[in-house]
Image (tube, rainbow, N blue to C red; front, side, top):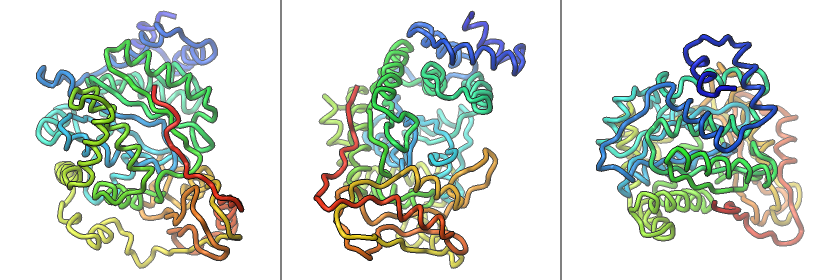
Length: 422
């Protein structure tokens, strides 16, 4: 296969959907070498517009991408925290499908937030504020848009070269100097085993480096939900609490560690440890929150909603009288040894928080808030999760939620999220 010719045919329409599928299936079945994966990604990123930044920003344009999970809201506090620390973050994010939530969907639960910015608007906002979180424009990596749509309907998703090309073509088109890839591994992740996750991580790091981006990878556990909140508005609320220095420990750890790596790559910090401390301070001194409010206002939000907890709850619709809450109780006393994030994510999707089909309209307010994490002690009959839903909670769904909690009679250590940094 001539890779450049194939990508050109995808982009200009000279290849039919059947021909594109055949090319993708060849890659899916036979794989690509490291050099070929770089060539594919390079061709995809140059299939459309690439963002150009001032030369004075040589090392400062950075971003992060996650392979997705349940309760994964890291990007939302991370982008403004990084901007508050002096780097530039043109974050091009995606939507959720099925049990994985999407950053864009979560932000769109804030009234007025628009994710559709053109390239010149992205450039202007990043210049003025330091960050944006937006969707992929029609002109950025259009080859990927068509290839992904065909992969989605033909079962050609789980290919390391194709996943690498899809993600990194969009990131490289944004003109990044450094990227952190967060590769999730576990029961509620795309990669179920550590071996699979490491193979993807190595492909990402090699290809990113081949494109001139300093690319680091964090391998993180995705068996239990990140933080306590699942669902679009609920995750925005938890993100804002994190920006106020009151976030869950595991979420704050992911934000600070990944942010520290990027600050070191941008030469704003001497090393990742110093960078981690700088990001931590931004979450606790108000500067990250101020940057988030500024970003939201630039993208269409009335900043007055952030002035008090009550105004934010009202704006997010979490005080809606039609929104019901149900508590699910622990069936025995002991220590939480596992929380099945996949089950919770699937049920949240069924309640309306996620899409069953690509064109589904989301219910931004439904979801769940946990009272426990792995390692917590619980008593029999004590509520461990609150479900936000419309109408009555289905008994079968309630049973699945109840069975997603595993309790041990012996003490359990808290989950360590980060397995390795590559």
